[in-house]
Length: 231
Image (cartoon, rainbow, N blue to C red; front, side, top):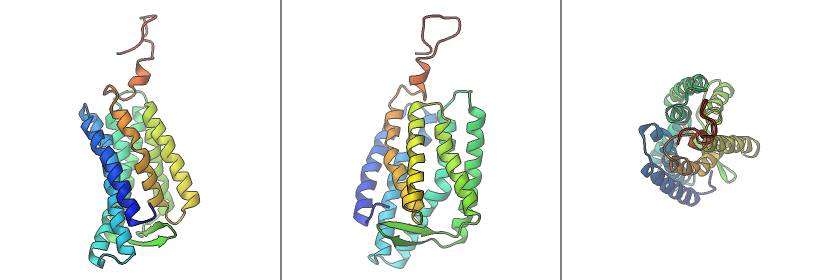
């Protein structure tokens, strides 16, 4: 998505650096799946740099195919499972847990269907202006795309944490922009935008270790008038 192998390389290094910083700030196990997301997406951009090299003919067909397949594995089966499961693990609040669980199950089902598609079909990529257009041969693509976005963006929006909700708003806006501006290269565009906004997770993980703490501290505890909630 980042217009060239060199641009993807720079973006990948920067986002991966934020990802390592994010992991270094983890205080509890429940934060790990989401805290790993910036590093995963940074590596994803580095892999796309190799995909660009293959499209430009600067590496051989074998490494180029490996890069395309690795890119597709992260973009398709991994992300729709990692994000909603990560939100479910990160947010222990019982309120809304049923909806978050349903979205996590949906994400795993979508990931399974996409994993079968990636395993069954060779991944191709070609330049579409200044972006990359990937083809995998996904059956029922509109249904799976809808499930993909619902499980990822929806889980963030329903997390109950203001930072994660902001991440959901930005990735949702990125999905809309990608669909409108880079229709054929939607997957590449959305993943690149998600990588950039995922640096918000460094802010999230550096809070006091409890997702939604900024909301909980402002909540009144029944029976204790004039005092705020858990500190």
